[in-house]
Length: 325
Ligand code: HEC
Ligand SMILES: [Cu+2]
Image (cartoon, rainbow, N blue to C red; front, top):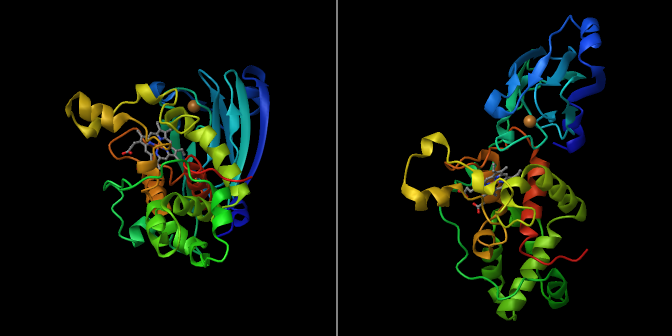
């Protein structure tokens, strides 16, 4: 499904209205929806019902800090939800289903727990079941270790790679069917049929990875990463974001002593070549969609469109490769 079609599934109008006092009077036919940091209860209400095609009016205010509101799977920019103000938002859904809404401002450590659902009822005329994610159809165990057995001695460069491929037939590596199901390390192995040294093969891998994405996708991934991932995984991908040290294991991950605890809490370091060069896009997609792993890694499947997740993955690999721009 193209992104423009996804966007057209929802119609949005927004207005921010001054002080809560007087305007309340005008809008009193529908009640306010309150936002609070997750520790104080998150959204109230956090389940909303609506009907297909019928405008849903939401009146949002915050009881504490600045929050944001957006509906997942819509490629929608968040609208601010301010203390002492009312944000008036009208949403119209043209497909039934369960939608996730979420906070878009880093309001605190548990920011990403500020989520709720909109149940949109109506007859499901053109229902097409969602296809299984790639990791499921591939039967990939995304929790198995995926360390690359060998890593490059310097950062692979797409620029050097491009100068090496003249006369080599590598077009079979440059399409999404290949890219999505192979790790950079597997691609490095596949390249051993060519007359190239090891670091040259890694440079060609960098070239192949860059050729399987676009500057637009990388830029969009970078933006989404800064908004949604950097607070844990770090601006520079090193797993050292401002919240990284404060993450708690999820309640059901049990004890396990300090060593296990620090292992399961630490956000993945995307600058670690062993880790990322050993992971295929399908594996990273599975982890992003599903989240969990008994850690603080949120699940993002209900938040991002498929295209947005591929953009994030393209950006994650850019911590491993020197790309040309
Ligand atoms: C609240 C903190 C937090 C946020 C926010 C977060 N992550 Fe994570 N993430 C983690 C933790 C902790 C892990 C380690 C879990 C593991 O690897 O088992 C992790 C692991 C991952 C992995 C697995 C890497 C691997 O090698 O297996 C990927 C991919 C990932 N995160 C992507 C993202 C993306 C993309 C975003 C933003 C959309 C994001 N994360 C936001 C905490 C976070
Ligand atoms: Cu918030």
